[in-house]
Image (tube, rainbow, N blue to C red; front, side, top):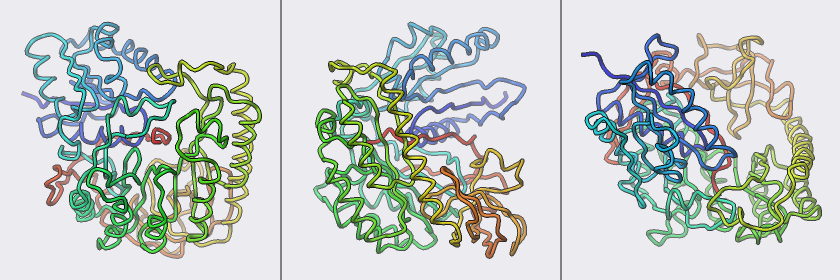
Amino acid sequence: MSTKTYEIRTFGCQMNVHDSERLAGMLEDAGYARAETGGEMPPDVVVFNTCAVRENADNRLYGTLGHMRPQKDINPGMQIAVGGCLAQKDRDTIVKKAPWVDVVFGTHNLGSLPTLLERARHNQEAEVEILESLDVFPSTLPARRDSAYSGWVSVSVGCNNTCTFCIVPALRGKEKDRRPGEVLSEVEALVSEGVLEVTLLGQNVNAYGVEFGDRYAFGKLLRSCGEIDGLERVRFTSPHPRDFTDDVIEAMAETPNVCPQLHMPLQSGSDRILKAMRRSYRSERFLDIVGKVRAAMPEAAITTDIIVGFPGETEEDFEATMEVVRRARFSSAFTFQYSKRPGTPAADMPEQLPKEVVQQRYERLVALQNEISWDENKKIVGREVELLVAEGEGRKDAETHRLSGRARDGRLVHFTPTGALDGEIRPGDLVRTTITRAAPHHLVADADITGHRRTRAGDHWEEGVRPKTSGVSLGLPSIGAPASEPSAQQGCAC
């Protein structure tokens, strides 16, 4: 009997990407194997890990499921599973609209997927299981990691905020924190297999510690990460300005492996709109944090999320956002046009703005931010940077014969692989080079490489293997064939 195969298609934010790693780990523990990309035979199981935050997320899902129906008709043994935030929201609606779906599961019961697939196969009917609260903490589940050199590590799940535009708390529940020792054990397990970079992940990372009564827990966690031998880069996403404390800034500046990078959602520069959004800070508080970060780390790259066209936003409100953008000098911004999310208070607010007004303001904001991003990137021309070589970051690399990597501040750099090389450069290796040109969304380094360090992560990438962590009682992760690389989008966090 041949091994059953699986494919996971991920939509949405980093949290979903990391959840998909958990789903892959569980399926492999249940005896499935990752389907080959472009293989002749369709996968035995296709899992859609959905997002409810993006505009038209439901239309996108049902359209994709519609395209799957002919495959299902031809291969009746194929199983289709839908999980994630949209599944948590729509529940039975998915099976009603797409009766060829076999399994629907929510954000609180990722671990149920293998059992639900087996039950649906045995009973020859759809299985829908949506829990209202967390079944088990996701980090107790096995995970097949997507990257040989960089890993996500959740510090918490859920969110205690009540932002009027956001449906995430309703779909992922109240914040639940992991114990610091569990987080550090997972980080150490990844590092033991050559992972160089870890991103601490949560809907609101700097509220970490609320469950066990330590408001300084996140700063302490950053400092503890600095004591892990072999961990070269630490990032985190996303903090909430309300909970940002000076000790976190001090920990960032004083811990050598914590990267000089901060992604902190602004959402609006208008205090009136921030109040309507139930964002418990105001623009000057936001700018004060930015100023403190820059004072402690002058070269830090600060990025943000901004929503344009929130209900009731006037031209004056929008200009306030533009002014904060001018003053903050973000290295980049994830900008979104407001759109209704059923189930959120903002969806029922009066003064919903016409699409053409929102579009025009959005274009003005993007133009301003592109100008600022370009100006800020030009300041880096001539600077030597250390790059962690990345996979799949440069769409034109094959044409230009460049490779791509991320600087310590998170900026994307396309570089020419010539100079002082120690053999072939692989994703996961570290190189040093000098920036020669700037563009709004990336940097170019056409100077010769001045240093190239081969790493175990690069060895693992070259061998086609990836870490697999077994859960919260981690020990050492195992190694196996990689899953396909998903695309993470910023902007889901608060």
